[in-house]
Every structure is written in C-alpha cells, then in structure tokens.
Length: 206
Ligand code: GRF
Image (cartoon, rainbow, N blue to C red):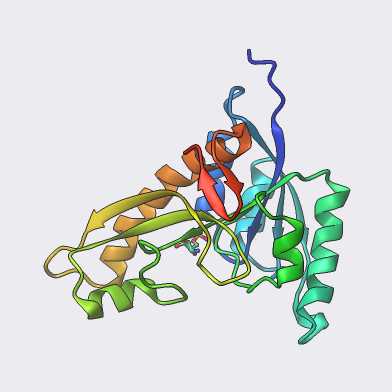
C-alpha cells in the first residue's frame, strides 16, 4: 500500500452527480493521490448528496438562495465548510453557480472544473444543443483550472467524440458523459499529484 500523502479534496455539485461518483470511485484506490473527504452542494435536494452519503463521504449543503444576490457571502459560507474539513483541492462537478473572483483567487491552482465541450468552443450552457446546431463533426469535454473568466481556464485534459448522423442532445450528451467519467479522475490525479500545475496562468506539466 502506498504511503504517499493524499490531498484532501472536496467535490462541489448542484445535481445528479455522475461525475462525482466517477471521482469517488477512482479515489477508492489507495494509490490515488486525492482523497474525497467532502461533497458539498448549493441545493439541499441535489441528488448527488444522497449518492455521496451512501458512499460514506461527508456531505454539506450550503443553500445559495438565502444569500440573494450576494454571491460572495454564499461563497464565504461554502469556504467555511471547506476549511472546516481541511480541504486543499476543489473539483467542480456540475456545480451551477458562477464563482466570484474572490473565491477563484482564493483557490487558484487548486480549483478545477469539467465542462461538456471542447473549450474554447461552446463556453456556457446548452453545449450539446449548440454543437448540434453549429454542425461540428467533433465535440467532447474539457477539464480545466478555474480562472475568474467563465470557462476560460487553462486545459488539463480534453476528450473528443464524433458527432454522428441522427444525433440528438440526449445521444450526444451520453457519448460525451462517458468521456467525462474517464478523464475527470485522470485530471484530478494529475493535479493532486502535482504533475499538472497552474503557473502564471498556464497549465504546465500535463
Ligand atoms: C456534466 O455534463 C458536466 O460536464 C457539467 O454538468 C454536468 C454534470 O453532470 N459541468 P453530473 O451531475 O456530473 O452527472
């Protein structure tokens, strides 16, 4: 068994948490360089919370709604949960809140996200519908370091899938999701081990 230190990691979710499950399962291996110690959601009824609890992971819910438009106040409450659990690395997995520069700067280089497109194409939401509408031949997913600009951070890993004749949003998103579940654990391992790092705004060593 490996004796290397595993980096205490939190996963932030808003929904069903299929990427969260992929990360939890990968991190079950003793040699995986990150340990998932907390799953936190901004919606108390996020389906992923129950899945995390069933996997024996501590959960927290920090509802953003009572904070109204004060995003930073919400993030301070979230950050307090992260601190309370000794978190050093944060993986966003379907976390549907735009983060302020305060939070992003605080976690710079230690905050990663998965996005369902080949960034820089199709930043934002509804990526599969927009890819179909644009008629691209290839689509995919990207794991990237988070920077203050939305979906603009340096890439850690990307995976491509073909867009096939007859594809609709459901078939294309399912094909992409399969790749998300494959590359997100790989990317988390690269960051947790220090093999991929954010330096001067650039991802190096991947
Ligand atoms: C994924 O497509 C992810 O790329 C995007 O939100 C979706 C979350 O799905 N950011 P899940 O909750 O991980 O199943």
